[in-house]
Amino acid sequence: MNTHAYGTTCGHSRAAIRERHPLSGIVLACLGILVCASIGAADVIDVSSLSEQDCLVTLGTADIAQSFLPQSTSITGASVKLRAGVGDSQPGDVTISLWTALPNDGGVMLQSATATGVRAGEFAEVYWTPVGNVANDELRYLVISGSNPSLCLAGATSDAYANGQAYAGDGYVALPSSDFVFETFALEAEKHLSNATVAGCLAPTSAELVQSFVPVRPGCAGAAFHIHPSLIGTTDFTVELWDAFPGSGTLLASGEARQRSNDDWVAVAWPSVEVDAEGATVYYLRLLGSDAGLCISGNFGVYEAGTAFASGNPLGDWDYAFEVIDTSHPCLYGRTNGSRQNVLQVNGSPGSSIDHVVTVNANEAIIGTMFKPGRGGNGKYVVHANLEAVSSDTSVRLPLAIGTVCHPLLLPEGGDPDAVWTQIRQPAIVGASRYFDGAPIPDPAKAPAIFLHRPDGDATHLPPGTEVTLQGVIVDPTSMSSKRVSATNAVIVRIQ
Image (cartoon, rainbow, N blue to C red; front, side, top):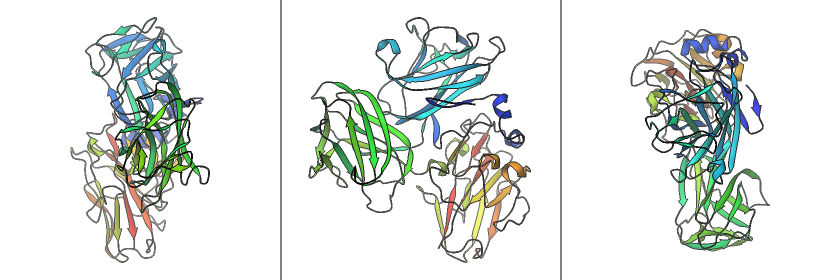
């Protein structure tokens, strides 16, 4: 596995497994997990077309592409599959690029990354810095090429994906009713429509444009502004997130939107950053355009928690037409049963709906329970307890749509749990069952089972003021992953 100039890569290959800890494959085979780099803390499948009938085109073909309609407000990567049994039995590198349109039709490349050493029958999977877009708004294009011309892209000719199609041959020849096997990935986020009403042209992009807002969730993963149709032009934009008025505070994140025109949304995305959503903390979005010839839409009296600024001057009750992508630690929700089923509970609860917190008074019972997924399974699971607070930096994406966990799961990959309950007896990989004091404890029973039982709390190891996160993985017959394993939901236990 290699990191390239434009992104991070993962080829699902045995060679990739051998690069990592020698015992990793053993324990993950017990759970059905294929080892892969922990790339991107918050990626989920956005668009998927997995219908496979045959080899569609070899990588020796010129001008290969697949169009698709994004469903999320960010794109963080993509994958394509190589048809098993086709090729010269040698691996190859596969490059996937994201474009606004076909390269011969005025398209602009937004991101690109290369998966190395991919073999026939495997997925070439790549990731990059999130690219913002407006969901269900515009087609995007995956342009595909490879170093081994004998390898072949798998696909179907049955119009398996209704919102796009395959292209191949000089000049990107359309292949009607054909689609490659492909998936795209996105930040797991919720688009909060802060102020999407478009009333008129509020301020020209020649001014320094700033919009203040108050977050409603503890993460911010991007934002968008609307370009009013009154002026005509095309330019690149940058959107920045600040914790105080730009220039007087700290720049927290930024993203670029290329070649946006009148009546477009300037949508950008970035890896989710922590923001204060507990009270009325104000944050600021700054919009910078490389060409000053456009105007940003706005409206009056719609969004009460902030205001628009132009060249440093507040515009009263006026606001720009803008959106914010909010996140609530995507790692909290799990992927069990394909529907975020809350199999992990503490004191009979998975916690609050947004932050999954269960509050317990000191000396009250703390009872952790693991349930089977909705479609059953053999009940095997692993649970880690971590006393470190959850943040974007601690979250780790597991491969093959297994899910995102709030702390590293594998010890060789940075996992450092404070307590472990496991039936997978590979202590070098996931740890042995032990309590917070480090003392060994019996392995828990298979789900459904109580794995943690402290009827009077634990003032010694979990005193008032403690925050501990419980989370793991469980065998799940209806997992979104082909390995039938899912990350459980997390529960954050706060002791008061």
